Image (cartoon, rainbow, N blue to C red; front, side):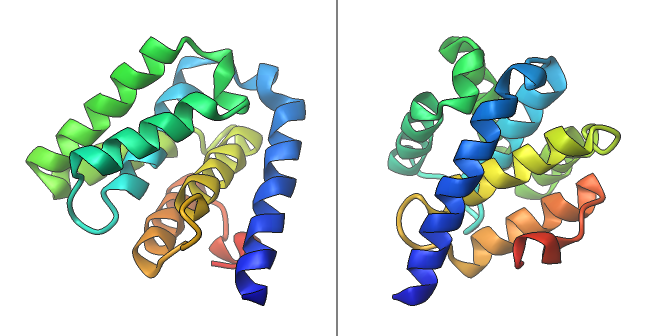
Length: 151
């Protein structure tokens, strides 16, 4: 239980940090990267069912940091990446990772995408190994050591 408490506290800390930087992140690459990250988390077990899609979409809609973007725009981008991952997981993953990699020169935004992935992954109370792998892959794509996030 202590591990979950630590994860939850870290998630809350990350959310607070992201709120203070949110307006700096209002750009297409950040929006694409966050939605790619969310789709990777949703598909981390190899499939995305409708309930999982709905839960993730609800989390996206309630996230303070992402409120800087129109909800319909985020939904469209999230659905795009989910559809790619659902139709051909390997190619969909490549496209999602490429979207995250575009933030490599903007390390503060890349870190925010990683933090959002951790928040979304841990939202159900279980940041499982598949979700950790998805976030770890995103870290490598963004040029951030996964150890920075205890992954």
